[in-house]
Image 1 (cartoon, rainbow, N blue to C red):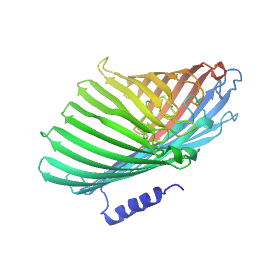
Image 2 (image 1 turned 90 degrees about the horizontal axis):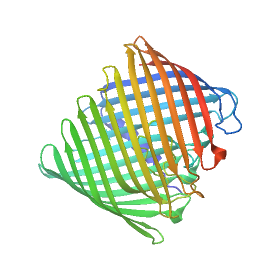
Image 3 (image 1 turned 135 degrees about the horizontal axis):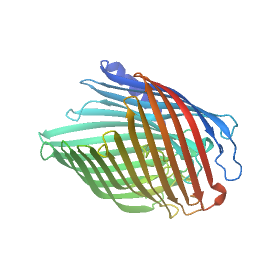
Image 4 (image 1 turned 120 degrees about the vertical axis):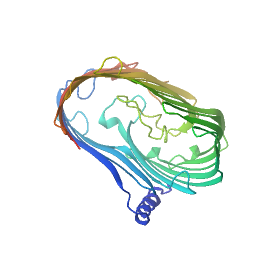
Length: 429
């Protein structure tokens, strides 16, 4: 039977709010909107195109609170979609992230409680229909004890207890329990060096034969300057299944953030061991790119290598903002000896027509290479968008949009092209 982590987590969350004095509000935000679209191919089909009206209603809420005890942040969006010709099931989804941090790194004890939910595709080659979408929920509790034995050195012990739940298909559910022993040395006020040793036990509720223990050790180095910050992590990982199968691989992570004048640049390069349940742990995804995050119809460890880079600039013209993302993920499924890859680009350009209106152009292209059988067929997906937004006062907005989506597949039965025209009315606060 699956270990219940959610119940104790909620109890801990509530008790922490009761014991601690109320947090002082720093701010909140939200929006509500209604959209109507016309699609010329509502079921995204190559030979059975159906014209229909689609409705979408969205509500987003967020807040941040902080005082001397800790801080709380939350950002969630609820969406409901309806299809006039029933080409897809009507569906509501919830996406977002929240975190409650009690204590500070300078103190003896800390506690972090996090919750996230993300919409995924049910399979790597699934067409992006509501019938093929899955919601993954991750709830994690991370207690930590710090021993500051010199002004520059900290020894810490950290635990993590995570529950990964899938709302549509609970066959992918799992739990993770880990312990970390670490040493952190502050070299100067802006850089630090660390050593971490970690052990994580992963249990799958419906596939106990895939349960495994992941052990890792790595060095970390981080620099935080006014315009530049970067961190490096390098070491090794070994996973061992309950039946004795072992996999050993290097682990590394390089992250860089650079801001200079009109330009912002971000780069992330990583190699890590994960699995088909946890995937990337609901990290923020590339806009316009739906993914299964490695999920398939069985449980397997994944040796994942990923690269993503983002560049944003306002230097092209005084009214322009250009943002470009490139991304690449290579997944090796260890239990079935299969590999998959995904790579693509996302470009968004905004032009400010006036203080109250702007026009936006977007382009996303992704190439998915899959070995067939359990993972699906190779395909390419391209989405082009054009949108005009006009703001009325500080809170109201009207948006007209046009999108053209095209998919080409090794299995031509899954090819399609869809044009979507819509209008959106929104209110923000």
